[in-house]
Amino acid sequence: MISFEARKKAGNLMMFTLTGFCAVTTIGVLLLILGYLVWHGAAALSWSFFTRLPAPVGEPGGGMANAIVGTGKILLLASCIGMPIGFLGGVYVAELAGKGSASVIRYVADLLNGVPSIVIGIVVYTLVVRRMHHFSALAGGIALGIMMIPIAVRSTEEFLRAVPTSLREGGLALGRPRWRVIASVVIPAALGGIMSGIMLNIARVAGETAPLLFTSLNNQFWSPGWNQPSAALPVMIFTYAISPYEDWHQQAWAAGFVLLMMVLVVNIGARLVLTRGRFVPRG
Amino acid sequence: MSGGETATMAPGLDGGAAKPSLMQRLRTGDAIARAVVQSAAGAVVLITLLVVFELYTGSSLSRARFGWRFIVTQTWDPVAGEFGALPFIYGTVVTSIVAIAIAIPQGIGSAVFLAELAPRRLSDFLTFLIELLAAVPSVLYGLLGIFVLVPFLQAHVVPLLQHVLGFLPIFKGRFYGVSYFSAGIVLSIMIVPFIVSVSREVLLAVPTEQREAALAVGASRWQTTYKVVWPNAARGILGSVFLALARALGETMAVTMVIGNTPRVNTSLLAPGYSIAAVIANEFTEATGDLYVSALIELGLVLFAVTFIVNGLARLLIVATTIQAGAVA
Image (cartoon, rainbow over all chains, first blue to last red; front, side, top):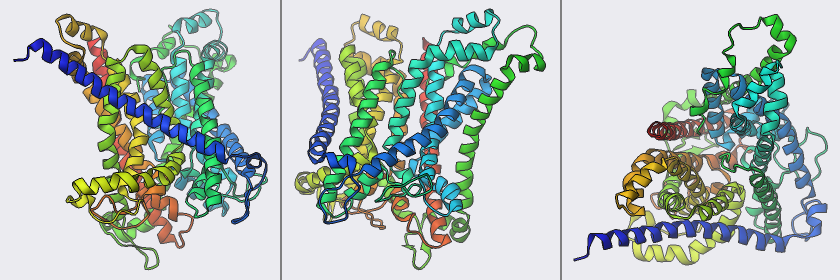
């Protein structure tokens, strides 16, 4: 007969091992994924990847300079749209809104955040592409900009709320108007967090492919201005990966490596900056 | 996720005795500042409404033509103008079920280990790593899916699976690599980090006193977890599962790359299929004719509605747990 005490110990040990095994395999898969992408991607990478245009099928070499610039342009535009709206919306929710309207905005932001990215693509297609009658970098930027808004609202709000109320009271007690207190006391106190949130947000949409498929489309050449279809790294990876050409597969790995490095560097950097490090935008 | 309890804090500044008049507030700039941030918040609401409105009006042609038949018929024939969404809905649901079935034990097991059993510093570090996994763009999961996972399944996993469980209808038939099964596995890898990260938060929100009380009467760490922490956290953990499910349902790129893109309903998981998001991604730019586009937009509407419901359930469950934990504390 096994004693109660021994059964307790055995059960404890067993569950410790079992759940530990889950955690180890989860981490193992992560390391496998990162390791494989880095190993395979770095091997396929060359200097011309950053400087040359895509080569036609069958010709060796070539690069994705246009896609790197395209991704940069689209992200710049997306930030110009998504950041001000999201940031100011977050300020409203955290500092000025009443309880009711704050929870409405918060609910709506969560709702928008839950919309699948491909659906955002459809909506921007009907709103922008159909009206302009052509695909454009502009439409791509708008799509990613919309995707940035909900996370920007929630992370700005979260970091502003972490600022102690006594700081606000101190500012108000000096007789300053409320907006001055918010702008020169509350926001600076939360700036580190807000900036990290912005970086994480940009890194998140940088890898989005689905909303770009029918907004910025793709382009094998340079795309001057905002009104023409534009290449972007994630779309290039998709197009090249599903193509039947071995040369293109290698380019896809190289592009995957570059994209992964961008995303990881920003993520690790931003998370290290976050002293509290607890809030992580989901998405 | 945890915004509820702090909502009473900031508006406390409003409670002055005499409210300043509008003129005073204009002079100090408060009214202008309020108008600016309020219109930004209004824009958030407006954009969300616009999303719903565009999906609804954009799909009107298809809705009028097919009605509810759209979601139960199987024929997807753009040339004949016949559009039935069942193969895509089926594919989306089946791949998500496969993903969830794998990710639930894996994710919750990891979360329990990280929150309850592992030393705190190790747990923080491992969680940091797992959350990095959530930041990897989905197109990269698709890339690995095509070139690494599919060949691996084809060479090692599926032969074994068919040898052991081949009598089951879901594992019958030839395996070409791209399939519901492959898409489900890729999805499961993608959603585990969400389950881990949210479930761990929920578990950590259970007050420490409760654990101490159980440990003090002689319970082991596991007994404490199972008998005391789990009942408090169960609803929130279910919420994390719904959250992950919503992501799996809406995921586009990784699924498009490994599901096989064949618009047919097939009972075998090893057969190629299609999903809602994948068909939109593949056919939207090529769609000719208003009805075709309208049918694709209606698919978007269906996807939106499903993820809306699942996300709503997730939020309800998570909020309920957080409030409950707060009340106990």
